[in-house]
Structure formats: C-alpha cells, structure tokens
Length: 151
Image 1 (cartoon, rainbow, N blue to C red):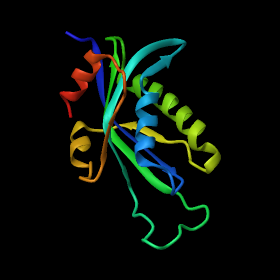
Image 2: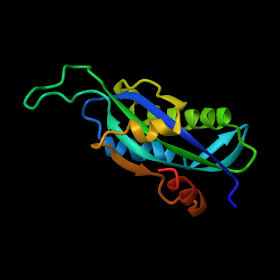
Image 3: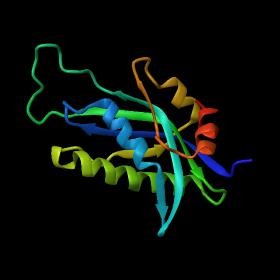
C-alpha cells in the first residue's frame, strides 16, 4: 500500500487580466511536484480544476488599467511518505506555490496566493462546469493513482 497523505486544497490569487488560466494551472501543479521541508525534499502530485472566481471583462470592453482577476484551483494534493501532517504539507505547498506565482506574475501585480486545506466535499461541489482540469505532469504513478481515486 502507498504511504502518502492526500489533502484537499484550495489555491486562490489575483492575476493580470490577460493571464492564461491553463498556464496558471500548470504553474501550480508543477510547483507541487517536489515539496521541501527543512532541506528535505519529497514528491507531490496536485490534481484539480482551475477557474476564474470573477466575471470576465465584457466583450469589446478593455479591462481597467491595473485591474486584476481572481483565479482559483480546487483539488487534491498527494504527498509521498507516511510521516507528514496535513498542516506541514499545506505549508510546504504554500511555499512552493507562492514562489512559483511570485516568479511568474509578481512583477505584474499578483499577490501571494492563499493556499489552504479544505473539505474533500468542497473540491467536488465548488468546481464550476467551466473549470479546466489540471494535474502535475511526469509525477509518480502511485501518487497519480492515489489522488485520482478522490476526484
């Protein structure tokens, strides 16, 4: 049996209005591939759905200068190993995801993302039909299988 911890996760931040939602999802899931705590790395796998939390600018209208849009990911994060606690895994994911978002969008005005554990039920209930499905590429197959059982 696989030793891992599965954590239902919410990530939300503001992005520039021209940001690509699929790219944002790939950025988040890629950041979760390898997590780190106290100099020790461990494998992760993040699968979920990304979507805009706000309404897009109406067709033909230009977004106001400096306006940002709110994006979110709800999904499941698998952390390899039996020694993890939920709070620690979320903190490790928060550091990795925040660094990735800051590196990609920080100069465009994006804020540090909120990364938090949520209820598993919320992952399924709060994903709009228009959400894009994303997951960590080239992840360990045992983590992929364990996580997809929750989706």
